[in-house]
Length: 157
Image (cartoon, rainbow, N blue to C red; front, side):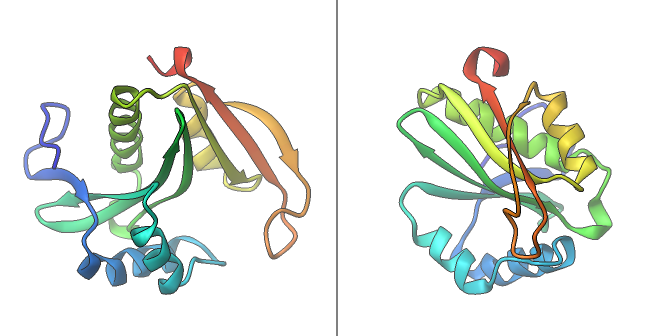
């Protein structure tokens, strides 16, 4: 659990527990039109390279980030904030947390895919130094393109 000075009082970040998955899934369903299934979250929870971190406000789950860290490369799989907590900096705190933790484990680069229409997410990632690496046509089930964004380790320090 993280309770560093960068978090406001009453706010914490911790790893997901099995019993949290239904709430994480509910946040996802309110955030994405084509959301992950509960089974997908269960698979991520059981995946040894995957971590789902939660952001809590007074013990209430306000957001999550799902990442993989393999051979120095972090892949951001999913990031969402509960509707009531959007625009409060929760996604930024989660990004800072996973970048710091991964640097301590030998992070060399970070990758993600994001819908081209998700302008708030793209702005957040650019704020952290992510750059567009490629565009994947028809990447999502509904045919929307994805931007592949990349953050080299030297940019995340």
